Image (cartoon, rainbow, N blue to C red; front, side):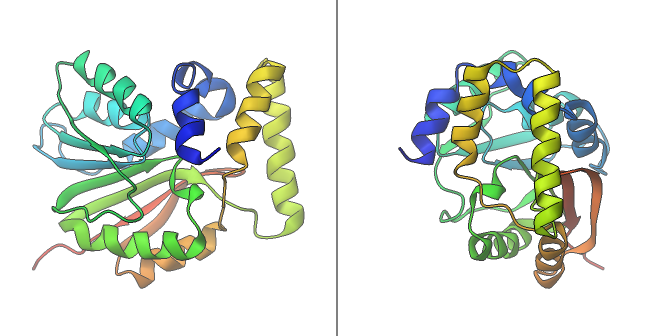
Length: 228
């Protein structure tokens, strides 16, 4: 079973479990929205890579009502959920079924975001993607990646995983939902935070930072230099 199939199957219940499977949900997504530096009334061109059900991009859309979103994902069923979410806000984002690791973005954007998706790529593909994202941003544009990272050492990574398991059990995850989540996690290919920050800087990003970290959950990114 490939990753596209796994996430299509998960689409129906995916959002309902987010607050359990992401124990730091409010701070994690809250930071990922709060770091966006643009005026709330700005007419932004925005791209969500691995948009899924539009959870993250929907939060951004609610805060930036004039943003025009393109949502890209491999899983059509997920994107159908995203389309319904945006329709509830009176919005019609561009829906793009595709593999963002291989697809030419074909445009330039003020804002590119990704939530809990890029960690499925190999390290080489992550590094290449960061460079392609930088190229796809308009001068002064911003990239934000709300994702999970690997611990810098084996002991730290073991701590991250145990903390997550303890937290989701405390929050009442069912045995079936935990098993399904762990099945999806088989596709994870996490990379350490410091390595990814280095890739961003090497790709030309400025003001690279990690704005939030809770064990494996991080919000990182940077900006393309503005024209002078």
